[in-house]
Amino acid sequence: MSRTPKATPWWRRPVVITPVLIVLLCGAMVQQTTFVGPEGFSSEQAGSSTDEAVALARDGYESTVLPAVTEDPVPLVDVVAAAQEDPEAAGEELGTHEVDGKPYSYAVTATGTVAEGEFGEVALEVDGLPEGITVGVAVPPYGSSTALRDVGLEVQYGDFENQIAYQAVAFELNSLAAEDAFDGAEADELLGKQVTVVGAITWASSTGGDVTHLQILPVRIEEQG
Image 1 (spheres, rainbow, N blue to C red):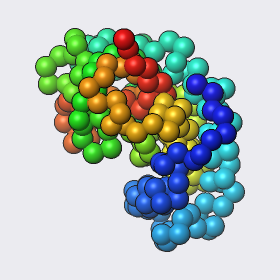
Image 2: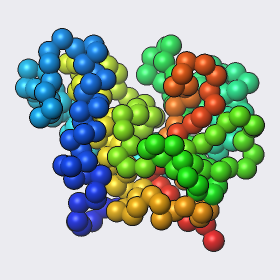
Image 3: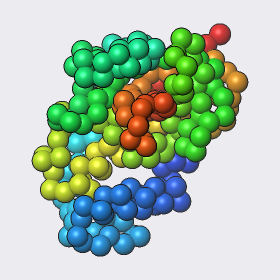
C-alpha cells in the first residue's frame, strides 16, 4: 500500500516514539561507553552516522525491503518444518542472515485468526503448525526486532560507526512497515478476524532454548472473507 499524506499514526507520535527510543538505546548502551540521555541520541555517539542510517532505511524501504519481503514469501508452516528439521539447511535455502553464527531471518506469509496476544503483539492462530509453536504479529511500533533489516537490506554492523546507528536502520524500517501494515488502524480491530499476513521473522529463541514462539513483523495485513 502506498503512503499518502495523512495524520501521523499514533505509534509515530513523540509520546510513543520517545519511550521506544529510550528502550532501544538502553539495549545498545551495553556495548557503548558514552552515556545517552533520555532526550535521544547524543551527537558524540550518533552524529551524521545515525542520520545516514535512517536515510538508508527510508531510501531502501520501498525499493528494496518491500520487494524482498512481498515478492516471494515462504509459507510460515514450511519455514517452521524446515527449520525444526535442520535450522542451518533451512536458513541457507530459504532465509538470510548477517554473518555466520547469527540466526536466520525469513520473508514469510501466514493465514490465521487473530486473537489476544502477548505484550507488543496479537496472536495468530495458524493451522498446520506443529504443537508447541505459537505465532504473534507485531503491533506498532514493532520495537527493535531486526528481521526486516536482515531480510531486506545487505548491511552489516561494520558498515556503521556504532551499534546505535546500525540499530537505527532496523528501527526506522520497523516504523515504516508499521505504517504500511496498519495504516492508522488499531490492532484490536483485527481480533477474531481471519487475516493473511506477509512479513519477516527471525528463527531464534528469546530464552536461548528451543524456538517455541515466532513473531512476524508485518508489512501487509489483509482480511479474508
